[in-house]
Image (cartoon, rainbow, N blue to C red; front, side, top):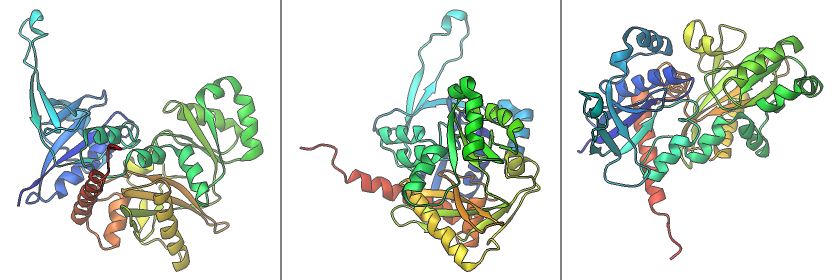
Length: 387
């Protein structure tokens, strides 16, 4: 049987670059070499695409950061590649640039060759990878790809638009306001008053378009709000300020499928810090998870149903992880956000939730590739002309 050539795309131009390398390492380790031929494609932080000399091997973001410090040159070695934004026999174009011997040789022409791929597996987190931009390029190239499409990816990245759609589907979400960086700089006193009038303290302050808890702070009182907004505004021009759920438990549920999605058993994250920030997720190693979550059966069913509704609300495909906040104080359940390309290491919550639901990591990868190919095949049946 012909092996499928899978382009595993990782890295990217976002604050989640290192997390992406760890996720990609797990995918490479678990692709069945009898069925698949994996191709390592790295996107550098400056946006350059590279056909990597070797795939990433670190199992965690902390290990990736350490490797980058000690062996950055080897990790970044490879040949430049491009993905042309049009259908063709060759998915990738390899760019071989001759080494310059003299100053006048720097404009020597590059040699172009092609490489055909059967499917793209983007293991990219955050902007320029999980926000619909790379998915739009795949659509232009007419190449099958794992995960959500353009709309779902862009909506799933924007915490403000996402919540608007959730409310339209009658999903419970905590109250929030959106603050533009420009408005904060000229009207911070008005915004501070609006926060106190409509939300109260404590509040969470987040970049609208980022993941892995990068740039997120909890402001317990007015004196902490300015610093929290300034931090979030370093990562996005749009900032979400939301009312904190009292005594919140972090419940997560994974979704898998296209038009008939399935939900995993719910799990609970017990963070090592006050909330599940970047340090607690990836660095200190002291956070823990409980799968299945210690919640009653009725709440577990509610979590699963709302996870599927959230997935359908954004027109999801392939995979997502839906995060909830469950108040110990009131028992109220809120949908917090949906992640269309969640952390994807073998020890990430998405993989653990499906393992507890009877789907191991290699099978999970197989199913995602099959879902990508099925979705692409269905698109090829559509008319592209009215005549």
